[in-house]
Structure formats: structure tokens, C-alpha cells
Length: 499
Ligand code: NAD
Image (cartoon, rainbow, N blue to C red; front, side, top):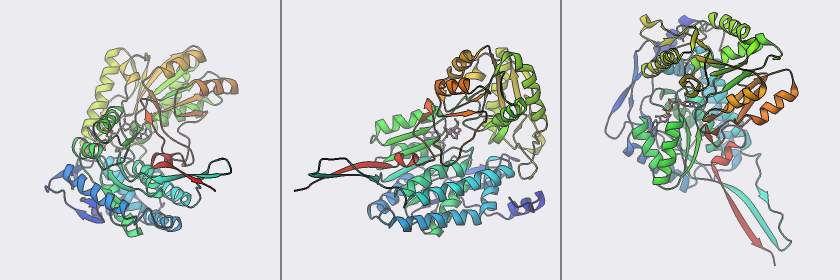
């Protein structure tokens, strides 16, 4: 974000924004077939930003039909790889040119601080699209080691129509993690953004079209999960659903696939990440800062948030003091203010959910060590203080269920084996972190922890080159890296007999 952007100039730009609020189908903006809309509310102050098309099964069917037509006639998948690359690079460039606008859309729509949407979300979207665009003409297929009288080619082909159903916590980034590899591999797509945060995906589809992505290749159908999401999940002509969201809804998609056309499903679901701090952590200040930001970043609305702090008994008090010191300095407030570090919770439902868990934690006998209250309610928005629970037992609800808010549960352990046992005692397996200066302890823990990502002496590290996804009920399939392309392609063997 340019240093020149002040709160006043961002507010002025936000006032001038015109929101795209229709569905984007077959290269055009259209209303929902039955004309219905839903209110898109900003969690910053409870204001209605726009009335957005409430797509239903009929609209999903229109979008899938357009996507299928585009796939069958080859207008995208049969383009020369270099041409698809050029168009996707142009798409990334247009996003870069409209970066402030898109960052504002994210912040207004879901309440994250503008410094995060401008410096983290949108740059990551651009990088993701560029990375997969560049991969298009660099990834080769295979020739099998057959006997000399045969040639067997193992080629990857696009699946066809990919449905992407995404959440609201990183609205455009979660969509980009699916759009970039699915389009790079030649598929057509129908994207359903979360009803809490549809604006950036709709605008991005328009930019893709401007970049030269042909009509029908990238469609966006805003709407609710039970209607638009379910219709996509059950559609007989959708070849694959790439889902990010809760484990509960992830299971619905498995059912939809089983009850319809056995479409492929990949699931990026929730987490309850153990952040394990051993007494021999190399730098307790660094561990405390990472532990605080590991749960308070993005208001705690992060799938791999370090929501369980597992700390070796002798250092618990000092670590909690350091975490509290970091938390007390966090600036919470107007997400449009570039100085704000923690913004609003996405909506009133999520606010109530978080406050409900805090109440539950108290009732279960955990000690509220910091925070625990709603604040800034006079703004009309939904804000919660950074909250830390001490004396948590791993079988308490606040240690087992995904809160998706700024609530840390502190659990102590006596030795590394106990830390690993508690760390793994969860239905989730998205990520884990270990802080120790002992390389043997670190590597033993990394091997024993059942999680898709393990961080040693850091937290939430990674980039577009590293796969991201879960073990256990955190789902299956990976976003990011070349592995993501596996989700959107079929393997074909062509065996040629040689005389
Ligand atoms: P959610 O599961 O409620 O919704 C996700 C998407 O599914 C939304 O688009 C929603 O409209 C749709 N949906 C909801 N009910 C549906 C139904 N019955 N049928 C079809 N579609 C339906 O999740 P959320 O509250 O938007 O997001 C938070 C969740 O996302 C958390 O559990 C978080 O851990 C997870 N998440 C995971 C990752 C990851 O990469 N693993 C990343 C971000 C968020």
C-alpha cells in the first residue's frame, strides 16, 4: 500500500466505489433469474454496501451450461499454452492496477484491516495468478519406460467444469488459489463466493474478462450456501468441486457428490493448530510475538490460526505475560485506518458465535487471562478484544472446536511426548508449530504431528511454492504449488504399438 494513502483518502475512495453486485455469467453481468437479491453488509459499521444477486439453482445451471460450452468448444483449453499464459499474466496485471480498489472491497466487505488486504491479500492474489500463469508452458507430461515396441504417453488433461466454493476470511485469495491453477490447466469455472464477502470475486471476474479470458470460462454466482452452493455441489455437469470452508460443509459436498455424478471433491477445511512452545525455545520473545499474531491476525478468522498454545509448564507464566504485552499493543478499530492492526469480525452471527465460545470457556472452568469482551459497539460494527484463556484442558470445547475468532486456549505439557499427544488429540490436522532449539526434538515432533504443514521456530510461514492443506478432518487435496494442478487434471495413458 502506498504510504500516501491516509485514512481520509481511503475513506474518500471507499465512498466513490461502485460495487458490482450481479452474477457474472458467460462474460456478462446478469441478475438472478428470479430477480432476488441479498444485502451485503459491512461489518465495519453495519451499513448495507450493496444488494447482491441471490443466485439459485437456475443461475448455477446457466453458469454451468456456459462453462461447459466454453470447455467443449475449446476456446480456452485449446489455446496455445503461451497464449493462456499471456492472458493470465494480463489478468494479474489488471488486478495489480486495481489493487487499492480490490483491497478496499475486501476490507469493506469482511472487516479486515486495510493494511492486511493491501499488503497481504491482494499481493498474494497477484503472485498466485502469475505463478500458475508462468507454470503453463513449463510443466511437461511424461513418457513411460515401456519396452522398445511401444510408446506410452502419460498426459494431463483438464477435468472440464470446476466449481469453486470459497469462504469469507480471505475472499479473493481463497478464490485465487483455485482459479489460477484451474484456469492454468485449461478448465472452465463456476465460482461461488461466500455470501458474507461476494464483492471482490465478482469484480475479479470482470477483470479476467478484460484480460482476455473468453466468455463462459470464468463465471461467478453469488448466493447462499444452501441454495447456490448446494446446486453447484449436486450439478450433474460439474466435474469437480474445490471447496474451502468448514468441515461440516465439506462433508455436505462429499454427500452431494455421492448423490449426484461422483464429481471429484477437494476439501480445505478447518483447523485447531497446536502451537507448541518448549522450554528450550530459542527466543521466547519471538515465540510470544508469533503466538499472539498467530491467533489475532485477521481477527483470528484464519483456518490455520494457532488457537491452541501448548506450552511447557516452567515457562507458561513468562510466555503468557509476553503474549499479553504484545496483545495489549494491538491497535483495534476502523479497518480503513492504515494504522489499524485488528479489524471487525465478519458478521453478527460470527460475533455471537465467538462470544458464545468465550462464555463456554468460562463455564468449563478455564481462566480468562485477557480480553473476552465485545468492544466498539457504538460504531455499529462487530469487534472483539484479543482474548487469552489459561488453564485450558484439551477436552474443553474451546480446545476442540474451531472458534474462528481471536481466542487463544493455553494448555500446559510436561514433556515433548505429551505435547505431541495433545497436539494430535483433535479431529483436525491442518497445521502445527514447534519452538525448540534442539534439532532432534524438532524433527521428532515434525514427523509425529499429523498435520499438512509443520512450522519449526516460526508460524504461518510458506509461499506459493509450498502445498497447503490438511490431514484428517481438515480435508484433502492441496492448494498452492504444482501439486494444486493435480486437483484440476485427469491423467490419460496413450499406448502406441510400434511395428
Ligand atoms: P462455511 O463452510 O460456512 O462456508 C464456506 C462456503 O460454503 C461458503 O461459500 C458458503 O456459502 C458455502 N456453504 C455453506 N453451507 C453450504 C451448504 N449447505 N451447501 C453448499 N455450500 C455451502 O465456512 P465459512 O464460515 O465461510 O469459512 C470459515 C471456514 O473456512 C472455517 O472452518 C475455516 O477453517 C475454513 N477455511 C479453511 C481454509 C483452508 O485452506 N483449509 C482456508 C480458509 C478458511
